[in-house]
Length: 195
Image (cartoon, rainbow, N blue to C red; front, side):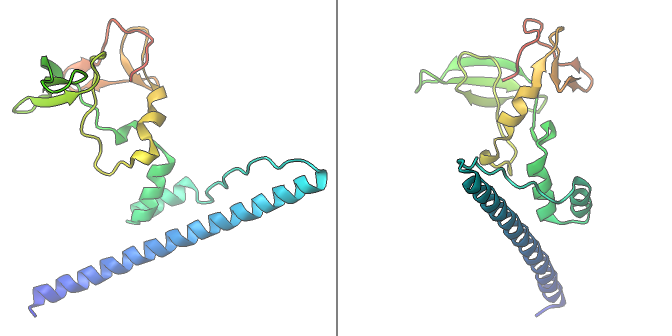
């Protein structure tokens, strides 16, 4: 074998060891969380049995890791800590929001509920987007590659997306701004939701 392939093999072995360690850490965290949940459920059930009441559903045990320790672990390169931190704090920065100009809209030849849209996004060529939102002007396309649909990030962020009294799009009161173009405005939609 060549020196380069030996180096590559060693590099991969080190990377595999790190991944295995992260997996073991996450398994331990899961086991500890499940154990705390079982103890909490048993305590609630025994207390309810003594009082002759029906036990309320148990609440999920909070994660004992602090955000600062997760931040530190994420900075040190722990992928598992970064993933856990992303799950805890949904943030609009995880969405790829782009403002574009719709150049052309036409009905889809094979479906009544779809439209084909040509959209200019400042790229060399306009994008062609097939949208099922026939009653709306806005559309969403190309979500983050690693975004898990079960996490329902959009549904958790959407209540904080709205327009203010002047029709400026905001997230938690902070206005959306396109560099070099200004604020994102929808003059006909004041104090409305962004969907």
